[in-house]
Amino acid sequence: MRIYKFWLHPDLIFYNTGYGKEARKIYKKLHEMPNLVIKKRKDEYYQRKERQRLIVEGKMDKSEEEEESQRMKIFLDILLELKDSGTTFTDDDLRDEVVTMMVGGIETNAITTCFCLLLLAIHPEIQDKLYNEVYSIFGESDRDVTWNDLNKLVYHEQVIKETLRRFPVGPIFLREVKEDIDLSSKYAI
Image (cartoon, rainbow, N blue to C red; front, side, top):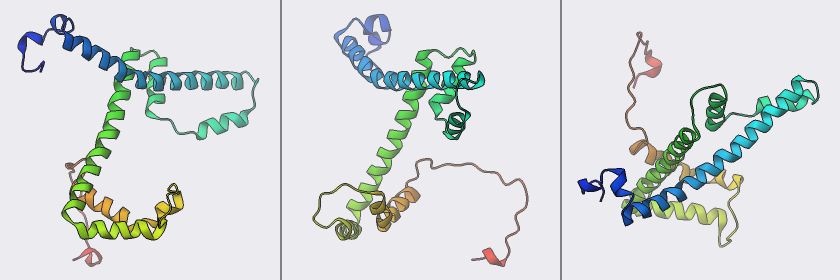
């Protein structure tokens, strides 16, 4: 609505309307979750920094440091290190980056799921095969799925991979060949 009504473009006007006040409430709710994630990771980050300081001072065992070094850094950890190293990253910048990553992860899954459901609607015989596979593993039980169950869902994996092949999340990858490639008879069709 704000796009179509030019008089609502300025923030000063928009946020003084009922629509703007409602939008503020929604934005506040939307920002609560990433802010909680950031707060939790910040706390963990500063606890790790404190442990590292204690190890350097000899007040803590090094075996815990080795355990820490094996832990993979997530994107937010890298952003916190950047902020800590003196860059001009604000908490709002951190939140915006976290929201971008969360939306990117959710949106790609949602789009793939939609395409998969579309393909299943077009091909009911594939639906039946998927149903039979699930029924052969779970039967009439309503138990939770385990890791072992996932390994048995071979046909499901094939369907998901075919969906991703036909409707890739990132459909365009530009590549340039930098040198000649020798395609021996081993690769001939």
